[in-house]
Length: 320
Image 1 (cartoon, helix red, strand yellow):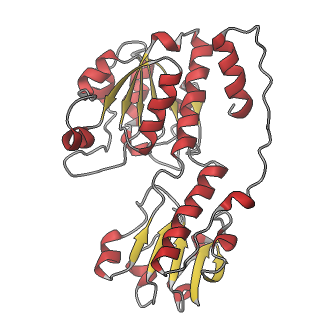
Image 2 (cartoon, helix red, strand yellow; image 1 turned 180 degrees about the vertical axis):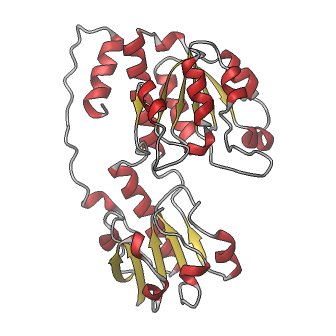
C-alpha cells in the first residue's frame, strides 16, 4: 500500500484516498523534507512550495496540487527526477465565472446600466474565459475575445487584437495566467498603456493574478475618471493590498473568486483520480455521495419584476 502525505485542508482528501493508500494529514504550511521520509505520494495546495528543498532524498513518485496555478511547483525539478505531476486546471473555473456574473449585476445596479446593450471584452479565453463567455452571452451582452496563444494555434477567426478590444469594450475582464517571460508575457499586462486605450468611463475586472494588473496604473485611471469603476479579487502585492485602490472600487475581495466549496472538491477529485490512475488503482473516486445538500434548494422569483431585477434576485440569492 502506498503512503500519502496530504494537506489537511484539501476537502474530503481522506475519503478520496480510500483504497489508494495510507494517508497522513498535516498543515501544508508546515510541511518539511523530514515529513516525506516514507511518502510515495504528495498532495498539496498553493501554500506548499514543492521543490528541491522539500523533495530531495525522498521517495515521492507522484505530486498533485489541488489548484489551477502551479507557481509553487518546481516543474523542472519534477521532470528531471522523473516524478509524476498533476494539477487541477479548470476545477474552479465555474466559481470564477459566477463571481463575474454577480459583479456585472452589481455594476448594472449601482450605475443603472443595461448589460444587454453593452460590450464586454474577455482577455484570455481558457477554462475560465470560456465559461464567462457562455454566461455573458446568456445576459445578452456583446462580446469581444482576445487570446493570442489560442489565435496562433486555432486561427484568428473569433478573436480580435487587444487594442481593438480595449477601444470597443465597455467592460474588460482579464482571465490570463501570470507569464513573466516568453512569447506572450502577462506581467503588468494591464498597465498605463492598457488603461489609456480603454474607453473613457469603462469598467475593469481582474480575477486572474494580481501581478497581471499594475496597481498604480489602475489607481491613476480611476482618479482621472478614465475608468468609472473596477472589481478586483487579486492584488499585485498579495497579501498586502493598496488601501487607496481598495477604497475606490465597487468590489474588492481577497483572492476568493475561485475559492468555492464545489471548486475545491473538484480539485480534490481531479488530483486523486490522477493519482489512482498513476498507481493503477482500478476505481476512481466520485464525491457525489458525500457532498452536502445546497443551502438553497428552490428559488421563488417575483414575476412582476423586470427581467433585469428578476435575474438579480435569482443570482444575489445564491451569490451576493
